[in-house]
Length: 153
Image (cartoon, rainbow, N blue to C red; front, top):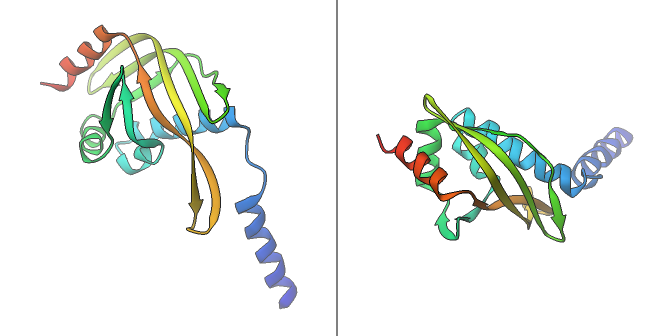
């Protein structure tokens, strides 16, 4: 019985503290998971990968109920053409053309940059961890205007 318990503890510790994918893979995973949750209309799953505030073209926005409501209502889907993160310390970026689908409209947006930051936290309140969170997005202003016109029926 003691051996089984010891093996279970070692297994749990391995899962919690074992090797993680490299930073580039973690950034891609964070963006893909946020996009998947957003497309499914699950705000909690998407917000998990967003920083508490996000900067869009230099303007800071709080991520919270308004973002959650938009995800539930519009179920936005983002197709990132080139998923090649560039990492510099605890910051990372992905620059790519994207296709954003909102409701029944798809908008092609060139040269979008997603900015990520590595945040320190804890899993299960006790195990130290670090996670990549989306901190900002830069895109052409005319694309912002096109998006706003789609969501302001």
